[in-house]
Figure 1 (tube, rainbow, N blue to C red):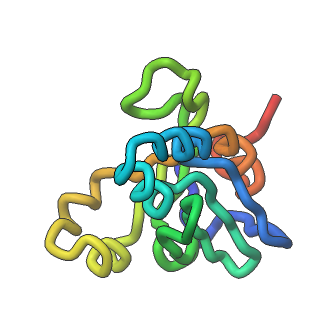
Figure 2 (cartoon, rainbow, N blue to C red):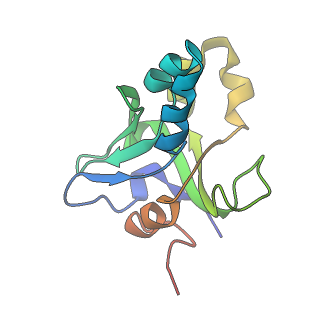
Length: 143
């Protein structure tokens, strides 16, 4: 199934939040091992929000880790089966594969921008299929 360009996704009419990324219970469990647990509270995304203006925010338990614009910063999104790097299908049955635009990569990755062009960012979790369906991504329709 073909990926959908960030500027072509169907935006929600109200702010929508999706459980994507690391499950929150893992972050709270990691507090048993300070200082790692404290770092995870602020750095590891557990949710993604999409607003009607096209802003996509990756949220950690205690702060926003990254904000970007679907139309300007995202080259393409696609729903894929499973999560790369995990073969158990318990963690994530689906994932969203995100490729960023060249301008975004130059701004964020600097000298590694060329290397990052061919490497997608995967976001898996319970909300992946719902997000794909809401944004009308290929494969996002449920049977």
